[in-house]
Amino acid sequence: MNAALDNPFTRALKELGASLPRPEAVLCVSAHWLTEGELRVNGSAPFETIHDFFGFPEELYRIAYSPPPALKAARAAASLLSTVPEPEARGLDHGAWTVLRMMYPEADIPVFQLSVDYQAEGKSQYELGRRLSPLRDRGVLILGSGNIAHNLALMDPDMDAPPFAWNTGFDMRVKEYIDSGRRPELADYLKLPGGQFSVPTPDHYWPFLVALGAGLDDRASYPYEGYQHASLSMRAVRFG
Image 1 (cartoon, rainbow, N blue to C red):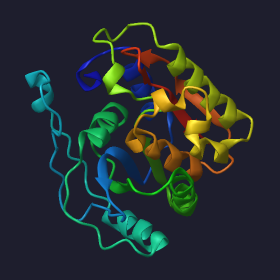
Image 2: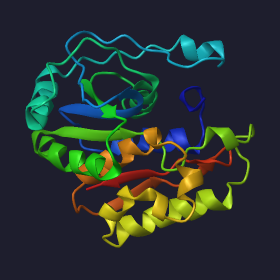
Image 3: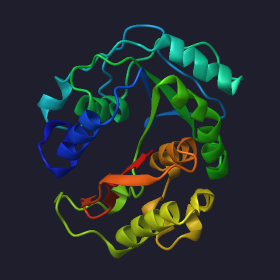
Image 4: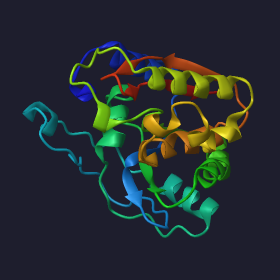
């Protein structure tokens, strides 16, 4: 629902987009493009807006967001990863367009996506980000769209419900590890307090690890820190 709301989280993302240097292109790694045992990129054709969710208010299904495809940058990413095929004609899923629409409402910055290999382990996701980091020197913003804590089974219907202790505990431990130079250890999220509840399935955590790796050892800042529905961490992390 954040895509259609005006709240502290959405305002923080709008302010983030306005404060960042204008990128040449954006690579979005979203929790809503999952592949099994492979990686794929899109960006070979104009984007359709994929409304890959059900049971939400009609206004969300009327939203369209179609930035230009970043074909050149997509090919550069595929070249860095060597085993990725040519960019395909796939639209933007809601993990991508909801965030991009807040950060870049004019839809005038070229975009492409990299899928998430759901079968790969946490260490591989982190190392993937390291391999993608040279794109930053070409003016590509690497954006991970997911949640540090994401447990839909335990969601409270009230967006402003107080967060569970395991949510805040896990979220704050992640921040501690980022700031203290223990970033590679975050790949083993089940070793952290609250990890089993905060990351019951890793689909929403993997994009964070990719962005974490791509951030190298750059200083981290936090454009937004907060929680929704008791079981979601909405923390946003900026590297560099």
